[in-house]
Length: 525
Image (cartoon, rainbow, N blue to C red):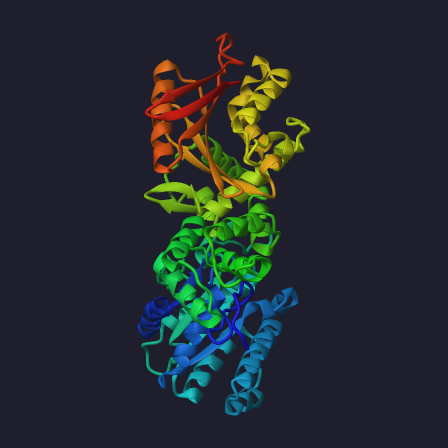
């Protein structure tokens, strides 16, 4: 059976193209050797299940350890009705695990033992299980979020904690290591533990050590997957280039890396004449397809923003205005932004986790603006193409200038201060949709610049959006734009200036100038 790129469930080396994560697994194995209890908490589809699967394989090769891997996804809500029901469900999961591994001895052991009916009795049974195996048992439980908001779950963790604290005492055998995996770190969950449903932060899992293994992929790690892929498929590609670009676009988010590769291999290559060669444009096309494909990952991203208005506002401010927030996980906003994979800590500042997410969020915010009644237009791509089939950015800026003059005035200043640049991004979206995409580079300065790199049919266009801050800042901004054009190997740039003063005389103005050998077309709105 040929391998494939996988974006659902655990990745299996014999079946899927995988990044070599042996270094990460070895780091975790050292934690197990030390007898650590810990939580692998990362965003959805971040490789947690694959990590547990690969750790389980490694542990099985050692004669010292007896790994037990299970998932609380198999215990429905009714499984937490009372202790007896929970324990019965937990035993069933263990029995299924032992049966699948062919350990008939332990299956018979479970069947021969009376079923505990209380959590404390379950603790005594665990001691018997440890003695029965004669090995260091490593318990791994995936999907602990499924049961996190439950007192019975807390009781279960509390029992494991008590046994952990007594494990050095004679006659108190327990699990050598316990690993919980889920989106949330258990200690960050709001647990409802009172009858009046008052939610408080509470956790009996303070014995857990911090899990600091980086599960995101580096560019060098991505190379290992591409090397395996090229050998298996006899496909030619510039491995260093694509590894760097995949990391640049995804910040190493495992799902996104595999998704882009999967799109190129399964959707783009079959439609090409050169089916055995990756080209840079293939990755750009894969980004377009990814951004226009609904999946559980993107659904979760948008849902988390919709369900958290404060997070939505902060993300909006970061993307559109270059707002800088100190990243502090004592602030629940940033804590949950990190937990959901929306935000990351970059040199102490809160940043959008990756460029694909930033683009997806921008598309979503622009769409919301379009349907709000604040952005109404009727245009299509063909109207804005030049004689060579490329985009006529000058025509786009002039059309937008006219749109703003007809529909907005100084009384809309507050709306424009917040949404003016998003209006343009929403305006250009249907023009490039399907044949291009745009990425934003926020330049944090007193000008509040927002540089946009539009890619359309493999050609790049650089557009800078900024709010007017005076002539001196304007000239500095042009010089900085010229520097950016130089870095991008482009000769022409575009500038859209939002002038929010009551009287300026500049609104509606446009000019073509040349600075440092670069042509700049500017339009004021």
